[in-house]
Length: 178
Length: 421
Image (cartoon, rainbow over all chains, first blue to last red):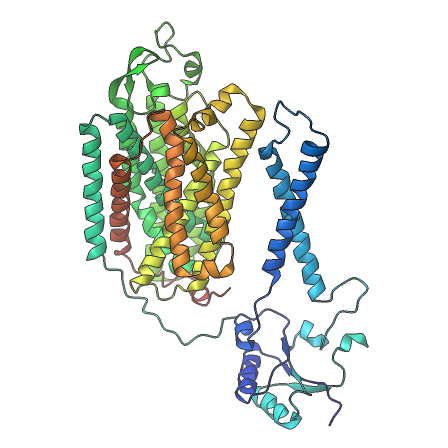
């Protein structure tokens, strides 16, 4: 068994890449992932990628923000030290709404940002995980797990026929660690 | 990048045919409306009938104006996604002359005809609409009805200037609607980008005119029903209501057309975008509604709180809360997920609910200033609403059937066909 961990097919044209995906899928070669320098509509459906769970994170963070704001105001202004402001009762609910709204937005946006960084391993000081640097520039890169699909020659043929301009056999998953 | 579904073909030349059930039912609805108006006047409920006529005329005009605003907005933003559905709001904009004429007639009749009412134990001859400022003698010093506040506003709130403003604003909108239709007609005939570029330029001018005049339009037609009270948020509050109800009508029309086999090129991606619009602007409506409420509640000045005082009376209070539930809580909870916006029937339900909700919203704005605490809900309310819905459907579908359903020479048509989100 070879030491190749991932086979990367480089394409110069997104349409060729789409054909490459088609022909690999037709031959039951599982695709690990695809890296492109720009978004390609419809590629998620083609690869069968599940929808992002970011909206759920956003909802939970938003809810947390609302509860934080409400409990803070309630504790300080109603429970711990009730004050009469503008002749209103201590529990002046309409007053709470703007603050609750703002903290909802704040928690939601920060939560989404942090969740995105977390799931993409993009913290400061941490090497970003990149399988091929040219995928951030001008190449459309298709990655295949060589251990799960142990027939490199067939994969190479399929990629070349689809229009791949370069095929790499990587022994490490991420080049950015080097 | 397209979404790599280039295989589907659409019949762009197929025009909408207005016949059969939609035509019959819209005509029946118009008859119901006319019968309800007659019923209202014959049962001596003139003021209530006029209030309902004003409500539905304003609603009707607002929806048509929102169609025009939608078209202009898409042009200025140079949006591609909406090109395939642009003919529907455009049909709305071609109904605007009829809607505007009806609104002006209702306002003029309401102002110029009068009846005797009992106000604080005294018999007063007051017009059917806008009695708070248009009653004879309110602005005349020495008159027994003299009202210093109204007299101070009479330079702006007097019958000739009121009607002039109304005609001027609506006339301006009709002029722009005419212009955009001329451009698209030429675009259909001669192709090229010239007419599209003109559309962008005039849309920008229209948006400025519309942005400055709609608040004044709302101040005049709705806010002046309670002329002692004022709110600078009111214009935007009305604009939000207009925009949400316009978007709902556009979406509902598209869904119903799709269900009868037209508009094959509109898919769940376009509906998703419209759903996002409805979702976002329902929140925007709540935002301005609440901004108005919070400031008045917090400042607690009697001349401002009178508006909400009336709406907190037991006749109105349940409807006041229902307004918030229907127009804010329900759409935000139902339309929050992506799937809900992409499911035709869910979206259709929300559209119908919001159209009813904004009827209630206008009802809450208009009724306390016209029929006061004698608020009722019966044949007149339902009948007139049905009548106007029928009239709108009839006129809009007639206009829609006159042109092809897609702007075939629009530069962004291909982008719209491949729209994917």
